[in-house]
Image (cartoon, rainbow, N blue to C red; front, side):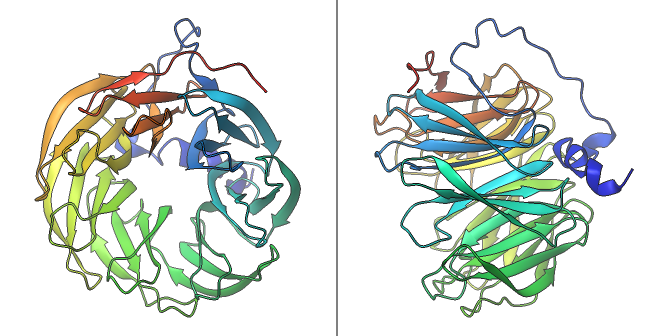
Length: 383
């Protein structure tokens, strides 16, 4: 059997983190009435207002079911509608962007099993009615949608783990993508994200390498191309990253989860695109996602890490200088594979969307503004 056909399984399992894949608890569903079903083995989430009703929605890629799930929020911490759409085999990533220039956010998935991207166009009401397949990849695992060349049209960068590259495409504003350049991304690139590390107003890209235990920084030039990667050694098996000024010096920093070390590593930026290690913090076992936000009040940024094997959330309260104090862990019912922050019940306090890989569900955890989180009640009636 070809390796590409099994790639989504490898990506989902964390590419051998710690040498063995943990056996995770199974649940009958009792007590999980407020958790929304997704596709099997969800692996990525995007949070945005997809139907322009002023409430936050979600799109989740189900890596083992060839579909994305779109959850339309009700503004009260619940879900008003749950729709699914077919995509290519092994969708391990989903991102959003207005690819056809009609003012509505479209969705694109990276289908590692099929070696394709699936692009769905939004009708403006949160329904995705027109599908387009983008081919020519080997093992796409992550994508970033942004305007790299400042022409007002959304472009696309794709991390391809089988060829260890980031491929950059220029969008034509009609849903078409033209390849522009490709860059080395280390062995087995996994997570691709955008930020502005050198404060020039241009989109930069950062990609983690599971094979080399590094992150690669690609500084944008503003014409759709990027400088050659700056490679930074980090801990074993780096996964998700969070970007913000955690140290209070006005420069963008990076917090990266190192799943093989059970740590969160904080890298301080110098405002020129360079990073240096500041400190690291212990997490639970086999951490994968991390998200930043003002979860404890006071205007300082905190961090939340999801730990797959210990099935809990590590809450780190920031002091604004790059130091964090652990708060009591939040137990969750299964293995959190990805997190996203947003004010889902619109009370002015940030909440969490917690996606569970083995449970095949997502839960909205309402924040209390002091670092505590409680699962939302059962979902509202469906539309």
